[in-house]
Length: 369
Ligand SMILES: *Cc1c(COP(=O)(O)O)cnc(C)c1O
Image 1 (spheres, rainbow, N blue to C red):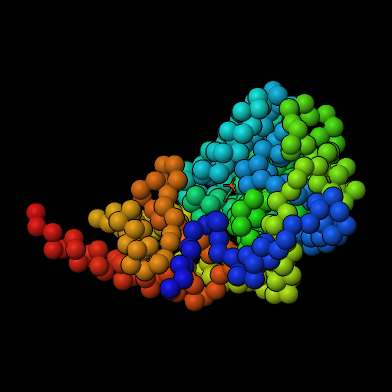
Image 2 (cartoon, rainbow, N blue to C red):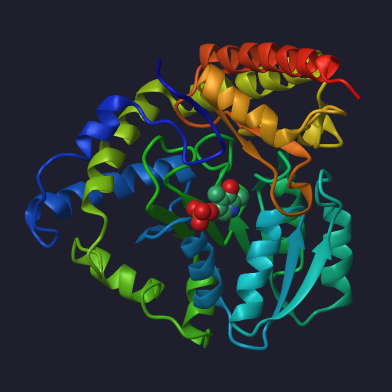
């Protein structure tokens, strides 16, 4: 029986997409690869809904976040890092590691960011140069109102750096429509391919900022990537196999149609939440208007050990779910529903969850005190 991998990345990939990655190598400075990355880049722009450059990096999503920071800021620049969970914290930590003066705006885990609070922070401190925000917080299953937040950042004319690693390609994010300066996503979440690539859109204000930005950078330097791409290349050896897989995955996404892809995620998100609640789980997301359509985080019921639950799901049911991160470790499970996922995958997982909870309840009832 195949494993039902229901973690929020790396996600399941279609078999033909995986097999596409097994093709023989080509010269990464030759004509086939030039055509391939040109074709792929064009379609990435369609998915980003942007005319901006989309830089393709061989790295995981975190590398893309690091690139967003080091290409736009100088040490001692002020960065407002809005955090609603573990990935918001990570974005802030990267800023700190490179010497930015990071002002944290923290929310309780399970809450969404408040655009008015961001407006106030920007109004009160004109020195803030950029805002870092997570579109979809994978640790809590919360999607921030990025459209409203982007509007606030524009009103105050600062740079907007967006972590869209677990949203872009699954949840609508019109990069140009919302006028986002830098938007980062990763290959192993919504793109139906393995880990190892990050895609970063870079708008005109971000390019201007990059000319003055003094943070050290080499591998992730946007300008080097832009110059190489003009010549149909990447500056360093890219993950060639992943580009083969990406080429086919993009075909599939665009054949399904992005509106249909978004609609499928909305439907599966709602289904997962409905099933979770009917099993007695409480969602981590406090206000369902902000519930994520790519990942659902839920508190493990009283008296159930999260590790026992996850182990039994894996060994008895072949269903793999994720645990909690940071302050939610041991308290929650998370079910991923992004990328290559269908209603059957979700119902298979929630039925397995029901059987496992019943089994655990039976063992607990039998344990003598
Ligand atoms: C997965 C993820 C990342 C990047 O993680 P990597 O392990 O470096 O790929 C960043 N932000 C969010 C919101 C994510 O879900």
